[in-house]
Length: 128
Length: 304
Image 1 (cartoon, rainbow over the protein chains, first blue to last red):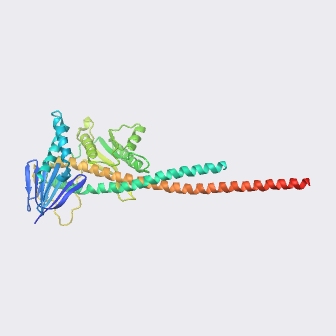
Image 2: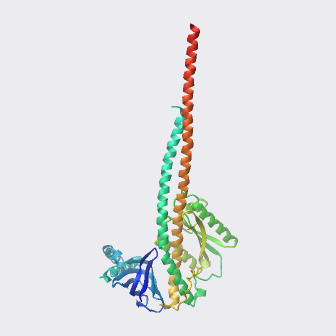
Image 3: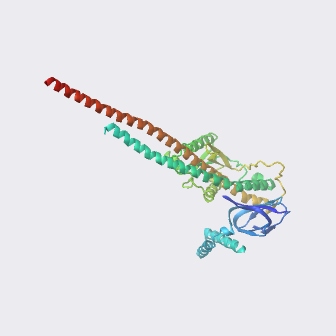
């Protein structure tokens, strides 16, 4: 038994395939999904999603705002913005992080940019 | 060269130049339809999954009957219409069809006693309203060619904010969107859809698939629903924008194809005219020569 996983962003399908395990961060904390999990519908926090594929690889993706739904060993990850770790430009994310964190405190758009950049960098680090 | 012939030849050259432009625009529009169509198809998995999630959350939520985005307000006074038009012209009746449909809708709503507030996407629609001196609540331009999810979110956030405002403070009780649905390459139709209050349309379930599984919700069904619904609105608007963009390109391609065909036709007629004028000139010249030599020969014949 494997999990059918699909990770979709608002404007494209990012990744889909079979996996043995999915780890995602919901608002209540990290959630690990194996086969036979009860149906779950959860809101995702900005964070990294790890998908362990059946070939033993680990796919990691940065997800900004979205949902996870699990039912009958089918996992759907919905996100307004989602990027696979190998699509992320590390230098750009690092530069964005620097720009955002050097900016004034309490600026909402800057702190959002900071958390986005941090999430991206974490996704690239999670990948071997 | 005779004056008429010169005039006709100049017109032929000008029509040929125009034809080159319309032909190029036709080809560009044709390639953009495909791209726009691909973008539209790429959003489908997200839209399907999202509406599944909304249905699941809604069927498990206790407060569904009085959720602010789902329940109709008691007072019905004001309705907002989002009309999606093109930024550029030369797309046949694309923009005017959408505007006409929006007008029909607003007349209907006004008859029912609503005050209508227009939101406009696209320079053409904006120009239409401005020319007639009608107030626009807000307009967005420069996005109709290649709408992004961000611009769709911006529109969605603006109308959501208006919807959630109390009626007394100028909030709208209904939100409609008038956009163009891309059916296929040759047929597009204007579609009017109410986006708020939301009707949770249950997608056709595949036979045997039970959708109302007992879900665990993180953090809770109501919280998930609260987070899902605004995103659902954004997706509805995003899809409408993308379908409209594809339709705009299709309409432009059709209009430019008609223009190119007309130019061909015109060149044909003008070439005939030019040939006729040239022939007339030649005939006239011959008859002048013949007449002249006749006159000469009759003069010399008379003197001898």
